[in-house]
Image (cartoon, rainbow, N blue to C red):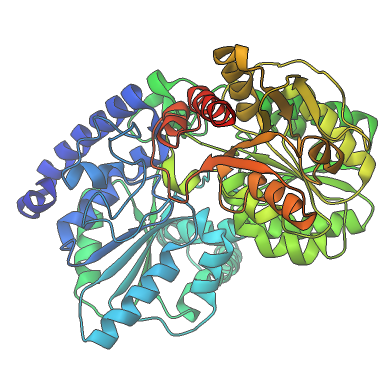
Amino acid sequence: MLAEEIKNYDIKQLKELAEILRGQIVERVRENGGHLSSNLGAVEITLALHKVFSFPGDKLIFDVGHQSYAHKLLTGRDLSRLRQEGGESGFPDPEESAYDPFIAGHSGTSVALGIGLCNARDLAGGKEKVICLIGDASLGNGVALESVFSSEKKPENFVVVLNDNGMSIAKNNSALYRAISKATAKKRYRKFNSFLSKTFKETSAFGRYLRKVKYSVKGWLNKNAFFERCGFKYVGPVNGHDLSELCAVLENIRAIERPVLLHVVTQKGKGYAPAEEDPSRYHGVGKNFSESKNSFSDALGKLLCERAAADGRIAAVTAAMTDGVGLSEFAEKFPERFFETGISESYAVAMAAGMAKGGMRPVVCLYSTFLQRAYDQIVHDVCISSLPVLFCVDRAGFVGADGKTHQGLFDVSFLRGIPNLDVYAPKDCAELADLFDFAMERGRPAAIRYPNGYAKNLGCVRRISENCLWEIVSPGDGVAVLASGARAVARALEAKKLVSPLDPMIVNCRTVSPLDEKLLKEIAGRQIVAFEEGYESGGFGGAVAEFYADNALPVRLKIMGAPKKFVAHAGAEEQAQACRLTAGDLALKIRALFAREQ
């Protein structure tokens, strides 16, 4: 295994290996899709860490894991089926390797996890080093800030490697980053100081002026001492692509017990020219470096631009997801009404609550899996006061290759029980606009959930209104299929074709909360299937069951949703197959219910 062999490599061999790893990363991402720019930028620091420390005895914790591909290659994973069903995850995962202490798909957690490991180690009398690799953008996340700044005391034998590439997915513009970047300037200051001392005599008038400038600059740079005040010995900045310097510095760090924060400066996309020139474009790509097509995200971006042009109260809020949620055009056209908070979802939601209180109509656009990180703010700051914040919940349902850490299967379960909050699920992009306008008219907290990928237009039977919450998209006298969400409705219509003689009714349940109680009462005597792409436990089907139980109505109800397990990486359709939620699975259920009636 390379991780063991490189202990004996010299710097020349490490440099050669770095180029080999870069080539493998580029080819594996070209074949399978994945995260490219961030992984290319972290090759040398990963090699140096494996050269100096002894993993898995020492512990290496990645923050997010977007930069873990070199680590995976070094620890025996060839990534030939990266992010594919049955292949390697795109993130660290303990189920794959003992070299991965934790799964890592969300940002901000590494330092807290590392401190926890250190606490357990110290109580057990261990001495292994715990190393966290975190990016400058992740450091701005709330959990990371709490773990760094909440205490002046840090454990010994604890190392935080701050990978400073000036980027999250896009450019990092946070105030924290500007403070950190001053440390990078510190090294330039030393060179500047040396140049001045050699060139000008301080007794000259110009020399005395430059001396004042020097001390002013030095005081400005020393503000970065906040890391020292938080219990770390600050080291850096270090060139994150200079293996000789990296290894020498890490050898010194390994020899001391003090907690250390090592600041390394890297280039996102390093070594692959297109990714160097456009690191955002190559942050996450599909096979052959293709950009994914997300119908709902694109539709939302256009819709927001149209509505914002007509209504000056509408503003868009996101957390480091401008491109992903379709807001690039909005950000260009309405910069004064566009708010990007960095990797800080809790802040985004709380800020939106403040905006709504002040008379704005904020639209918070986040992936389903990231919205769950702001749950307390949804409850405490938005819904208790019933403020008109609209949540556009992207990547709801099966998310595909990003796997367990990114599945959008939780949002119905964690949203539908919150008082004052409406939850909507459009069947197509045209209905997204209809539900958006409906939510704006109602003027209360609401969430609209929709999946990634391509979505075809299914046509409108009846537009939503207070008196027509759901629509019967295909009438029938057989089993009543209550389908919630774009993929569920599309599969239900496909299933009807497979069992057309059985004449099922297909209902587009575009509001999860509130339910269409009138229609539910009308179909109470039928066989009913509640069909959704979300967790069966606590989901849409559960809401239907609760309604019938609360109203003491006799009903024959079957719930089809994802089983209560974490769904691994694969294609979204493959994930539906694994969870028995395809059109064919629904057709089998309809046939079984029809046979039981005979």
